[in-house]
Amino acid sequence: MKNFQPGPLQKIRDVGVGECVTIGDFVNLYECRIGANTSIGNFVEIGKGVVVGQRCQIRTFAYLCPGVNIEDDVFIGEGTTFINDRFARATNADGTMVTESDWTLRFTTVRQGASIEAKAIIMCDVTIGVGARVKAGSVVTKDVPDGATVAGNPARILA
Ligand SMILES: CC(C)(COP(=O)(O)OP(=O)(O)OC[C@H]1O[C@@H](n2cnc3c(N)ncnc32)[C@H](O)[C@@H]1OP(=O)(O)O)[C@@H](O)C(=O)NCCC(=O)NCCS
Image 1 (tube, rainbow, N blue to C red):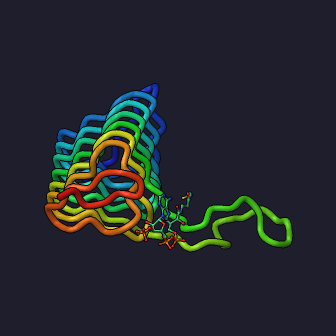
Image 2: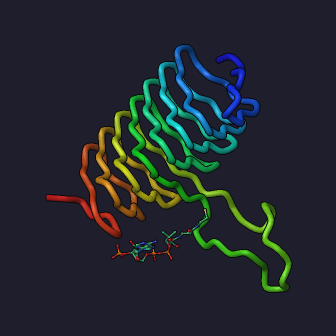
């Protein structure tokens, strides 16, 4: 992996990118790794520690928060959002602001060849299986088995 020189419309900090990666405009990438031949669309944000595999497509407005691991050949559709906190809150019981030390980072893995379509929300502590498909607009709250197709809110396996 090599360091990437950001273009004028990109905010890119300490990112390792493989060969032939394409990165759109208005993209924020922080301390993450992007595998070879992957495509990052416009307005994408990828957080600290995220690993994106090779030959992935991360489409416009996707948000990959810290704790997300994307294997090779994965499609992440437009506007898809990942979550890394089970119970989000602004302040603690004593009224102080919640900071990084007040919550536990949760992890999510999208396995090889999976396809997550537009505007899905992927909750934390889940694994999207090898070759699985998450249909557009789904809210995934549980693991998706290898090869399964899920849809809906909460997402269910389609027969
Ligand atoms: C993490 C989370 C998905 C599960 O929380 P939980 O309290 O453990 O919920 P449970 O696992 O007991 O789920 C109970 C049921 O509600 C469903 N459910 C839970 N959260 C849901 C959600 N956000 N949307 C739709 N259904 C949901 C579950 O699928 C389950 O349904 P089922 O038993 O019929 O399959 C939920 O708390 C959540 O939505 N967290 C989001 C926090 C957030 O937005 N953070 C933002 C900052 S990263």
